[in-house]
Length: 90
Ligand SMILES: [Zn+2]
Ligand SMILES: [Zn+2]
View (cartoon, rainbow, N blue to C red):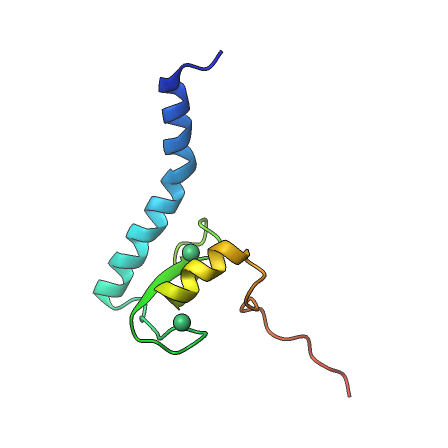
């Protein structure tokens, strides 16, 4: 049986990479490694970094608060991922 303490530990471990990824972004932005962009949907200047993958902490998508929340609610497929569009062979 899980004690509440071990549930806490599990939560922390599950969120550790998320937390680390956000720290890495903040560090990279402040030292110039990573450039903040405008929201990829609406172009708003005030953006959050969104991670598609927390194991690639500097692979972020920039989204304003509104679109960031929307993406999380709607699921990752809501906006096209950054993958290059399939080349249409004409
Ligand atoms: Zn936006
Ligand atoms: Zn996000």
